[in-house]
Image (tube, rainbow, N blue to C red; front, side, top):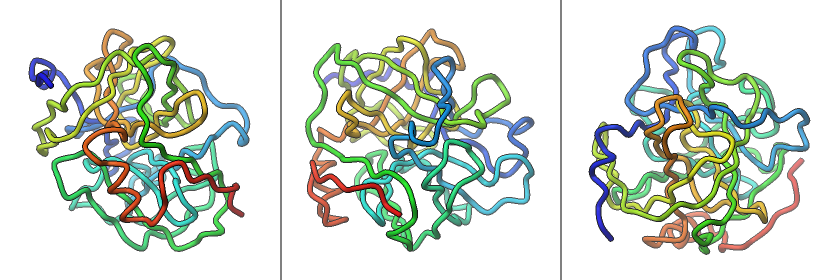
Length: 263
């Protein structure tokens, strides 16, 4: 597959800075939130999106740093670039549409993908923590298929969304990841999201990209939209490079396995 390195200079990883108030924080190399899209209005509308939190003294954001997705009773999927050595990870919010609220089981273990692939698994300590669990699949959606991206990322230059949002788009193409800064992630295959009504931005990293059956097909990685609709959003594809197999071998959960809501 051709490497689309022309995108790399303009691409931005979507991790949200957690060491300062969200309204004033400079963007780390790797942040995102959904611009446009729609706010969820009821808890039942959350398909299983979760929030990754770190220890912070900053007011306002509750330590939220990235999105994530619960794929098993004690397993959460996120982006590798969301795991930063300088942070102490405290918990995962599992059952909420509000960024700084909800049950927050503690993190037991974090496992990064061993290759240069933007994927990580987080194990939590409470299988009964309430919330929906998303089925992951090793089948990628076809070109032009409708997909939906969920996240609490920024909606403008300064402010992350207090409420979970969803953006709808279509699959534009699959391409090799061009990301080399701040970490080399060039071994992954990205599912490129063409926006219909919204696009990811800072703070959306690690969140789910779902197909129309509600299965997770990608993990939000980077964007070149710079807070506008004039770009694309890239999601690490679970259908390529053996990523679904790695998830299965690490968690013991087979692709396509469904779980009832926990709690």
